[in-house]
Image (cartoon, rainbow, N blue to C red):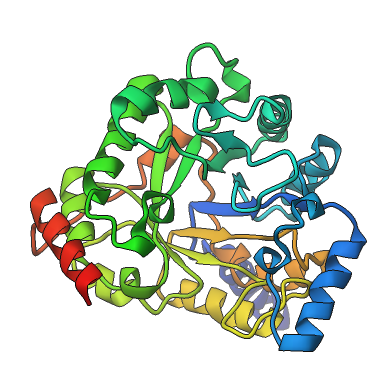
Length: 352
């Protein structure tokens, strides 16, 4: 009898251990900005924090020499992303200006940083990661005539396949969203159409920002009808998920910046407790697309290894864009809107 009991316990234990985990996160992004040129940059951030109770890399401008894009250092960040075994996308965010300019200018890839960009993308591919790029320096005139050659400079057939990004992180900030740009729908549409013309294999996801954009607006209603099945990313936490899901958005992403939380903040250390809380909410709300941004500021492997334990049991990371696309769901927008509705709404916003 004792032997039978022990056998039963062992079998039951094995069955419990073999239960498939609840895996639903298919996109996990590790986004870096231009690196701090030296440890002195973090000392300067600390000075600002001690004086004002908050600090951000942008507060150090116009010291653009404080920030650099350098392949040897970026290679280390790619290796770090791969070593953590919780990411399938390495993202270069062009948020931070350097002494050499940004990764992109109005003509396309910045010639001084072209080699860096293509080497980094190629190396991340070698490490088995998809690559995303969040460009900033778009052409001043955002129509197909200007956007097509701009996109060809880094996504076109002239660029070796290994050096081309897989994903474009397209922030509405770069289309004047904070300035209530009444042409934003036309310009975003021109970007999507131009990108599909230049390289239809590239996936684009839309990155929203703060303020009025944290709630469903006419722009979102128009956009999700015009480009159904597009991921929409939101900044910092999950507060906006319920409202967007109620409006019909079915492919929501949450972006968390572990070194940049609510004001006041300091980008030279990690907000471990808030990061854990946000990631736990991501799991509770079953968010399938996640981004950690600005990770090369305040980074600590110790902290990352710990707070990534929240999402590791739920990872089912897509190995490529084709697989990722198959995870997208049809949006179900309840209140349709036109480009004219978007234009009128933003004109009214500008008057307030």
